[in-house]
Amino acid sequence: MTQAIRQNFRFSHRLRVRWAEVDMQKIVFNAHYLMYFDTAIADYWRALALPYETTMQALQGDLYVKKASIEFHASAHIDDPLDVAIQCSRIGRTSFVFTGAIFRGDEHLISGELIYVFADPATQTSKPLPASFRDILLAYEAGEAMALVALGSWQVLGAEASQIRDEVFIQEQHIAKELVSNQADETAIHALARNRLGLPVATGRLLQRAPGISQIGRMAVSRVLRGTHLGRAVLQTLVQLAHQRGDHEVMLHAQRSVEGFYTRLGFLPRGEPFAEAGIEHIEMVLGP
Ligand SMILES: CC(C)(COP(=O)(O)OP(=O)(O)OC[C@H]1O[C@@H](n2cnc3c(N)ncnc32)[C@H](O)[C@@H]1OP(=O)(O)O)[C@@H](O)C(=O)NCCC(=O)NCCS
Image 1 (cartoon, protein in one colour):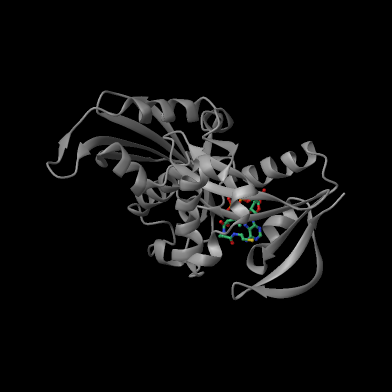
Image 2 (cartoon, rainbow, N blue to C red):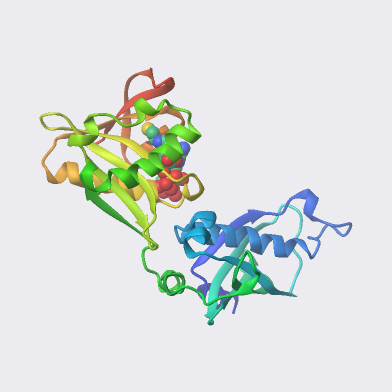
């Protein structure tokens, strides 16, 4: 039975019950389950490749919870690992419903339902859900991809790639503006991931370092969307391109803090670490 309920959900968020969330009976205080659903919903937006704030600005509205209900089947305990599953189960004219279920292993502990209304933040009056947003919710639940990676020149993609680079390298990592974009951009092939609203969310570039040698660089994913495999999609697109043009080596200079990201995708460190733009790097090359 639980298995059948679980299969209804495409999306699930894993969390662990903390000490501060249990009451004297050492079971989770009931109000925290709403917080668990809210935490999972924040992750659901990430899975849709929708950075919440920018998305709501683009859609010219905001989402408000109109009604939240919870049904308790069994209690969660301290340190329990919980899977909080969320599904958009109904879309109306100005509102939609998120159905939630919390599982401990195979055990279904909690059911929940949250009704969201799309409204104008200034007047607090509801407005029709934009068709683009409705389509994204339906597409996600139907198992479709939430971002597409485009390839192109700096002339075509530069403005959008710069938006992500500025956000990540200049504002977040405090790298000097003049080091973030350079002449190599003019000859590089750029990858740009856009979400289903057409907003840029990730970027990277491929240079011809020497005959037969490709160099990948300027990999950046919008901060709030990290960990949703956008970086992997951009990197794999660039690697595929390098192979298609017949290059025998694909290398890059990785920031040490994200070496593990490249290792997971088949890159191996080569040589000694060095400083670039004031940040410790290591050269990496794609393994056989
Ligand atoms: C590095 C970066 C591009 C990775 O993009 P991302 O979209 O967050 O990564 P993904 O979600 O595609 O991760 C793919 C895999 O690598 C893992 N991974 C991601 N970042 C990691 C890290 N820092 N260390 C170890 N593993 C990492 C993920 O867990 C995932 O593993 P899985 O396949 O088992 O789920 C992104 O974190 C970023 O923009 N960082 C800031 C800018 C930066 O440092 N750029 C790199 C300059 S060299």
